[in-house]
Amino acid sequence: MFRAALFATTAVLVIAGSTLARADDTGFAYAHDLRKEHGRLCMADHWHSGSGSGRTKAAAQNAAIRSWADFTNFEYGSTWARYSRAASRSVRYTKESSGWGATVDARPCR
Image (cartoon, rainbow, N blue to C red; front, side, top):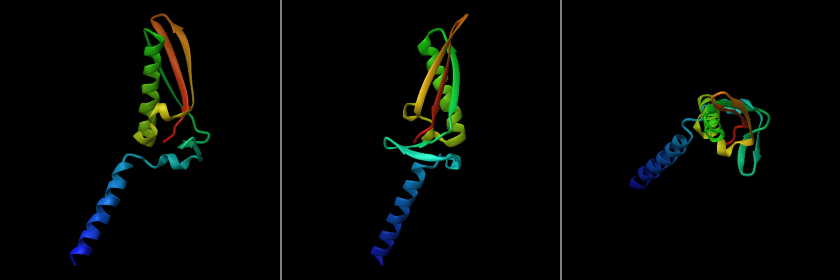
């Protein structure tokens, strides 16, 4: 009886732990075509963009990446919102009167 209870408790903890690890994945990503790329699961043809501005190119790029990550997190969860893991990343800059503007585009991956 003790072994059965111990096994059941262990099973519940393992299942709960795996559920918590993906708890903030909204599930909406699976409405898109997904494919494996370099050990990541990526959206095959769905892009997100972010834009930002700053006194320097680096500041503008960081603001644009935050914008990209914030929206991606809102839509798909933090699992998908890491720009460093995204595929097909690109950045474009524009000179503005107060510094620089940046736009980033990328396909979310987890």
